[in-house]
Image (tube, rainbow, N blue to C red; front, side, top):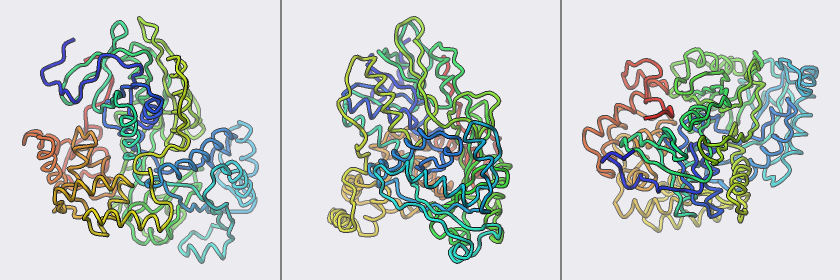
Length: 581
């Protein structure tokens, strides 16, 4: 099939790659970087934007998986705590420790149901008492001993708890405190994996808005969802890393698989200064009255609340419903009943579908969060197709290493480099001490930015802030009229260097503008104008991009009133379905 004249040379892949990866979420991005570091040319194609699916919908925690102790998944806890500790070292610009508090309702509650669940039985766990919590945290600290960089757990009884949390509910008999980690901007970390991969292996390409749309005689067809161009590519190995869309991508490849049975998880970003103050900088991680685990913690000056766990059949049609919003607000009231909290304080919602293995009849919370690899053969050829099932942000590096080793074996090549202590993006040479941080800020101010601006750029981009600052100073950066803490040249740098295909890529993922609840029609219009200058978009293209952002904001993120957009849920962007063109 011949590509239309609209084909963009910058988005045209080569005819053959040793490895083609379908899907640019965290699983695909992690594998891409790993294989590039082994000297393998790879093509990664993502039907939407990089890290736009489940990878943009997590609780934004890099956690050791303490809840997996209840189901006896010790291997997963051991891997999760190790990978958490490694990410604190490898990506310190985005992954930071967070003090986590477990409200405890009793001394002896939960012993029997915990034992039943531990041995594989079914039991609702609504009361995790002091004894069972203490035992679990002892095990958690033991599993997290390798590369440890955070304190061990502690237990605080009722009176001391009330001194720290005067607004906490009266049913709380005490609290246990341990340390986990959070990721401030997951989408950017995923992007950095791809940028690092392409820098390490210039023959590799990562393309967004490029959907697999069929295959004939071993040649894969990819359709550019921006230009309409169709490209044919052959590969020695294919990896299906399409997450919740694995079965749809498999169908486009001619495979009839039923690997995925995803659950959606929704989250809220809430503007409630009293609740934010009550958290005292900590995360509250607790069992709600229905037995589900809930959480809330400070996030970009607001409060992040999560989450739900609901089986879904179509990952293209998910959004945070009003019922889910009310449920999550209700769980917070269980812990802080005296703090007024209502739907009007919700400034942003988001939702993702966890690509869990299909498990008919199981309670959503009982489905394993572990990962696995399933292998098929591309019809009409001997090309292996490896499907990456499950996975999560915390363990992506370990999963990628397992998948890379499988692919390297297929190619008859040996691993030449470990990623265990490989820095990611702006985490490379990131300051470890206050003196080193001061020295880096001096370098940034020496380029020509003010100290407050240097701190902002360092927080957003890690050591990549040096390149951003140089670009901005050369172009005499000026603040956005609608959002002064971002610069016009700063957005121009992102547009020029970070594969922005749609305006939504810039506003929802490359920056925290939407995620922090600050996206407005005025911000959207100003950003579109900057994109027009940087990317040569026409006025018509800009208006179309603004309309797409408005629809996505309204239907996917609870911003219909702000954007005055009366469209039904699910009408944001065309489905990313992988199907024949």
